[in-house]
Amino acid sequence: MTTTTAVTLEAVTKRYGAVQAVAGVDLTIRSGEVVALLGPNGAGKSTTIEMLLGLVRPDQGSVTVYGASPTEAISAGQVGVMLQSGGIIEDAKVGELVDLVAGLHSHPMPVTDALQRAGIADLAGRKIKGLSGGQKQRVRFAMAIIPQPDLIVLDEPTTGMDVEARRDFWTSMHGETARGRTVLFATHYLEEADAYADRVVLMRDGKIVADGTAAQIKASVSGRTIRATVPGADLAALASLPGVRNVETRGEVVLLQCADSDDTLRYLLSNTPAHDIEVTSADLEDAVLAISAGQETLA
Image (cartoon, rainbow, N blue to C red; front, side, top):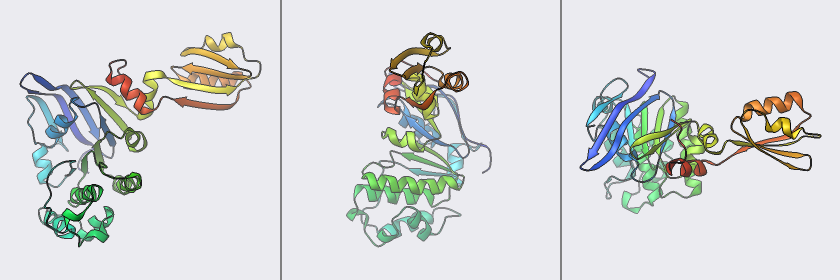
């Protein structure tokens, strides 16, 4: 890696006529991070990615990729891109197409390695037009990684894949991130963001409204619920703890809805005979829906 910062967007704005697509976005992505970019349609995700890739110029603000302009970083082979749309030559064979892309870069990995990492080594002799949608996405993935980029940008990477293919794809991605690569991906499969992203960035109305780990974002909406067996529990003492919003009992089982579960857990373990403790939170879909609706903000 050339720097510890992969991507920097500072006060970036973009307008299309009367539509403010991106409204003053500040975003820094560190090298080695896996970042999921989420948001409803029209939130500004695609425009942000397009500016990061140099396909669109911001009206205001600046975008740098490894300290250079997006165009310079891409020309240097530092960025690999896998877009959901974008034509590929239907009459070409898989191996021929990936080899063609390899020829555009100064230090590509061997084509056989790219095909293997994308899980399509057995499709090298097949024509693109004979592939399923999921298989075409894997071809796009091979094309994205062949320049051996520092940053991989993925737009809805598993569209068209079945459950098994999606799992295999993310296994392949783990191999790339284990090599220290930075990944930015946009997806509508929120379970993928929850399972594979180090960090989730949520956009709404052209702005970043949440930025943190999936756990932080889930906790910001509804906190966490602690379920524990607490013989002889002092409910008044539990209810008075900072961050405890509600206390329920079911026999010796106590349910605590908490804004700060860590402090509550420390109290339970230090001051009560609590056992069989479980901590749960809202899932990411619940959190994203709440934040996208404007109920919460974490940024």
